Image (cartoon, rainbow, N blue to C red; front, side, top):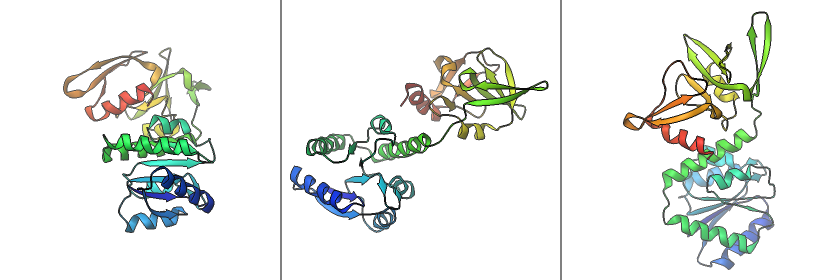
Length: 256
């Protein structure tokens, strides 16, 4: 098994290398990269390793920048001294992480986990998990819009996120629908709203709707793998989700 280490602290890299060889002396360390820049260069001229150990915070940036720039399909075990990097997301995406200082038993468990994953490993699915993880981490660093000021006659009314059931596009306008059914125009496109709203709460399900997860009343299976939603309050038109988006929608509803 070929392993690449991405770590900018020499003592930490040396300790990790020794621990890996202590656990399994058949593991081949193909390199130790110390920065985002050097890692990108390494990936451009070397075959992908079987497994990557990557520190999150490197001297010239976050290691996620490497995997954003280079298509990586190798499993990654992240290491970090910090616990603020959305560690919950690592578990949700089935990507392991280790807190420093590294402990032999935890490292051994992580390597065993990798060996188990190898049995059912699919590179395309893993690449999607890595991409999803990076998206999640970037989102966790953003502040989402939780209140909208809408015009009503000569007033501006604040509407909080929890009061919003969904946004929909009609007649070249975007309308906000409250839980009580009241509707207001907003000065945003659906694409702009998608970037402003918390994706754990809101989902851009089709060309017309961005919905709050709490607005979903019923989900009906439909022809050719499509889904039909019943929203609360009831929408004026049928709300359909294409077969291509159905799987992502189900994951969103399940919170994963």
